[in-house]
Image (cartoon, rainbow, N blue to C red):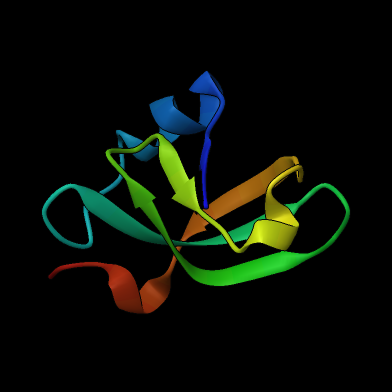
Length: 70
């Protein structure tokens, strides 16, 4: 399932390097405290999540350390 990120997250992701063509690997913390590690964001705006996260609110996004091209 994909959820569209708020503009503030998209703006931030656009300043970070891609993990590959058109995507970034990120670690996400939700407002309820749940975390997703090594999740994929497509085109800095669509976060791929399991169905149980469909209604969750993103509290923080960080680049996944192993997902950055060097």
